[in-house]
Image (cartoon, rainbow, N blue to C red):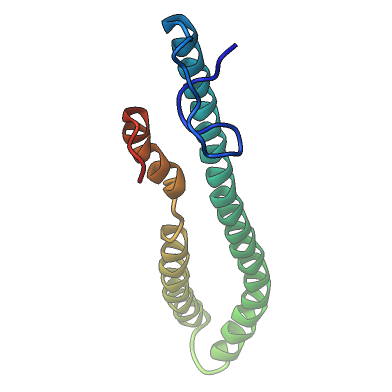
Length: 142
């Protein structure tokens, strides 16, 4: 069977397809196009998986830091509440501690949201190579 037009295998020399039928040429083109599409899908999967791994790692770290911070701040909050209760009413002391916690929570939320916003879900390399497909089908080289 004669190969499709284009560079020969490993030589870069064009392959003569003068004796090839249109059916053979179309079969070769469809096979190459199918391979190209499969490779692009695999590339997209790999890129999305890498970005998902980054997101999971960041989320896990945020979760672990949040729990550790929760435990430390719980006990510090109780100590602060008790310390303030020595100089004022216990209810006011608790309110002051709660307001401090509200401010800390807002700062942590803003920081976590910014980190999650850095995730790039778009498979950049796949988009770039897919933009080259129409030119490649026309026989043009980038």
